[in-house]
Image (cartoon, rainbow, N blue to C red; front, side, top):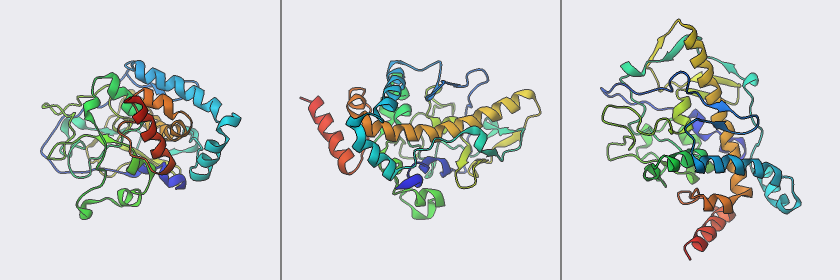
Length: 285
């Protein structure tokens, strides 16, 4: 698999032409706060999410215990576990360029390419918000191959594309959490991929760029625009790093993930899938 397995959702961009408007972005003052070592924490995070944070701290210790030597070996054989750092990446987005969601005519929450992959942290937040009904286990592909974006086609063999759930969509391929007034029904518990969009990570040239699927932009020449740009930049970096944490947690903390209800919507392969099914079967007895 290698590094491509982790980069799945950061090159995927979405576009669709619709006469729709008004999608929210993260308001000023509610940006996620980075922990000293670990995932970004939001003020709205609930008990399942906090358990996942604590589990991550334990998982880091397990990686170096003799009991988990085989999991450690398999992880490093199959994945690049290098966390990326903001200072290693260049931001290619102009300093004052921001999304103009209020005047958007290209709603990113609908259409054939509006697939949103849900990591473990995304699922935990939706569970805490009482929105677990919006978590769907596949299908992950796009039916019309002509509508597939190059990055989506290239990443379909990755663990995250095949194994992780997505946000449920209706018959019109619109996100089930999109309200009638075209605001996000999950906010502030929305997935990390939605939070950082349209900023996306390119690992090959170490840049964060504006995804071409979003043409809804304008220039804001105010100090807040620079702050908002930095928030989106860091959110894009953190979204990638969270995928690394997800992989590690699956290998060294699967029983705890089962207890938290975070394995139900996954569809893994090989040894991981056999362990997942065994754990879920045990919980039903």
